[in-house]
Amino acid sequence: MSLVEKLNWRYATKKFDHTKKLSTAQLDELLEAVRLSPSSAGLQSYKVLVIENPEIRKKLREAAHGQSQITDSSHLVVFASETNLDEAYVTQYIDLVAETRRMAPETLSGYKQMIMGNVTRLTDDQRIVWANKQVYIALGVLLTAAAEMGIDTCPMEGFSAARFDEILGLREKGLTTAVIAAIGFRSTDDVYSKLAKVRRPEEELFIRL
Image (cartoon, rainbow, N blue to C red):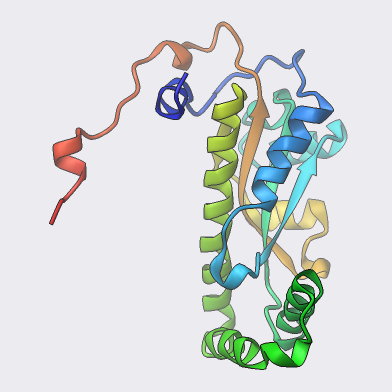
């Protein structure tokens, strides 16, 4: 199938087959796709938690209105935004760029100052909003990569971020939950898998100038 056909095949899976698990190779490939996601300035201002522990997932389900995808999917992915986007964070990134591209860090001083200027002009709340935007790019890559691999997903916002932060100990790590995604394989009796995909028609969605 083409990518478009695979995107038409995917849907927000409501009922996962809890007996089917991703292989290690499948999970690694999905996570590598997420690692390669684009982000503003390349900062990747988030962490990605892969939750397998059934006891932790049971607690998270309680903080997500009892939604079964939390516990029945093969894995739960939690995208958590950085809350401490400061000079130290930017410096660490610049050092990574220098090391990867075999450059002297001082040659990147202008780039560093540009990034710092963009970050420091924002309030703390605005930085989290900005980081969350980067998270959603990574989420989109995850959903697309999973569809290409024939793996089901369900992106989810229906949960208490504060409770997730508490259960996962994120606050002390300088993180806060932005969005989550359940990944695995659909149950054969998930009625939503049989429904036609609803999207706005091309002439209504796109404006060509």
